[in-house]
Length: 122
Image (tube, rainbow, N blue to C red; front, side, top):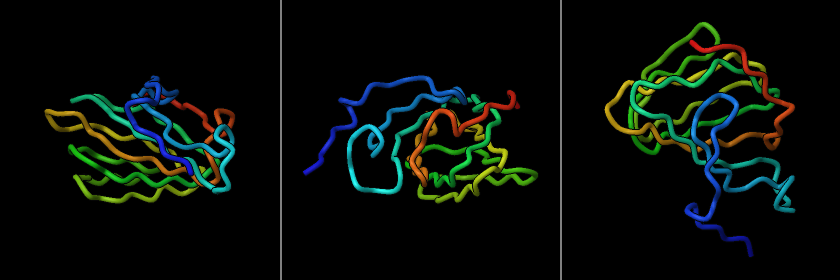
């Protein structure tokens, strides 16, 4: 059985400059799943750095509001929105609200530092 409390996960500032708590990564946790799961937050007025991943990624917005940028597209995102980010896409997210933008990140195959390339600040 694998159970983890989010509050026991160490918070880091990720390469794209969001606050991140990795909840599940089979490469580290020895689990038989093909994805990793993290809890992310971006402060009011902040934007993550433009970056690409070799993996596909899904964001699920838990709270807040923002603008998601993927390649040449942009869309307002709100609580309960799900966003699919294809592998290799240039992406970032901007918090346009007055509270934290909080979302889950599912990366398939699991996230590895060498699979992420930081491009620039928007």
